[in-house]
Length: 291
Length: 299
Image 1: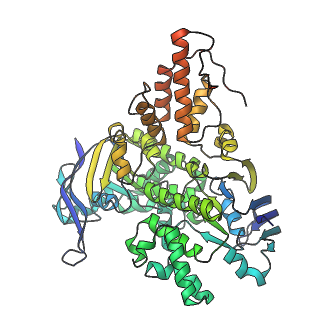
Image 2: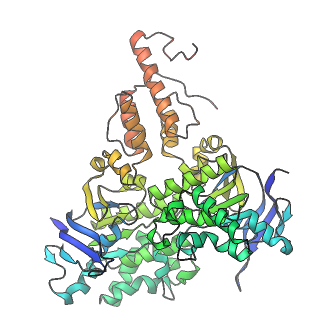
Image 3: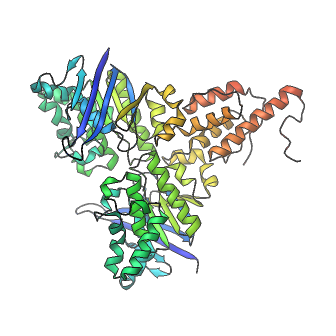
């Protein structure tokens, strides 16, 4: 069953002025409960505008957004509960920390939701564990932490609200490879353990390939594709034309196929590439190059 | 004199009130030659940005010296010369653009320096052409994409006619197309205008384009060499919290499985060629199963 659904969703900036512009145009989409979706699109493609509709931060100019089959704008007073159910982590969320301690910062959302102090405590501890922050940091000021730790505090703040959908806008921007892998693994583990639906916006095709099951591609305010990662990356030519790309490994395999090598078409992760090559190239006891 | 930047036994520490001093750079030595393209890698907190800020006297060493074209960066009287010769580009293009029209932004520093207006016109046009943004000279910066804004920021530096440009993660906030545009601009400046480039980055595909890769960890240089020399050390890089290009990782893992592949593959083309050679070799052995199963490259 679709947890999120849009019908003819359109959003126009500056309506009625000469600057009127559709940022999202006639998007029809159904996201299944429990999916892990990578969201891609070049700057200005409309992907950020789209995700801000999912928790009611923006109201459609026309069309509808449904959460669990309910139009989220059917009753304006209920929009607050939508925001509790669909958690949104913005880009560079570490700039939004404000509390005196890590614990208080993460507890802010759950407290506002009306959880009891005991529930809040449990939710905060659980969220800290998900993002790998040791309990000893709870009473520290978030401003004394490293950049990567601050970002994980901000993500934990949304996880602690136990949303049914977690949306993250480029959670790895500016992180080094190790920090990037750590956060993505934690988000993946959170998804797997809690069955939360996750939408991850990223410019890294390698990250989408490694972590997401489905890919949502926006282009010029329109939905270009919503499909499995495999079928989306098989359209590499079109993606390149959209100013996007495919993982490096996928480009190599496309080249090999073009040159007539008997490899598979839709290869987008390294483990899969190795498997395919080892199938095609049985070992002959070759000795590796030295040096 | 061919040395653009020389870092001699530099230590840098800072201290917050009531806390122990933090040593960010530890007895670091590095020299960058004129016309060289050096990529600096390191995990967050390794000290690589602190090092970059020493290249044009934004930071001064606690111990040791930094020379820019032989000028000591602690020489306050020469600060203008140093900053004119070494320009910096930062991560967020929105923080670097000050004017409301692209060409005015590029002219900003020149106007401050009192350069005659005909000369400003010439230099601004040249700089915008060099980064491929000349057609956008009358646009407002907010109408541009991230990659275009970052190229305008680079043009603003170029207009000062620096010998060297230091870029601190210039593509971190850009989409794939913006990243490609900026990297192309950087490599062209280096190859066609002989501009010295120091590129700090987390993207290994960018570092592969450099003449030399320097890896910083805990305030020290721990690995240094051509991209091939550095990226062939897959395990060491992973220990340092870094990555290698996907093609390098693929060949590394296949080698570990016993396949006969070179250990210094860093580009897509090299990877495709090496894998195709493997297919050809196998065809040879299965057909004739002769000892001479591998491709004979001698003509």
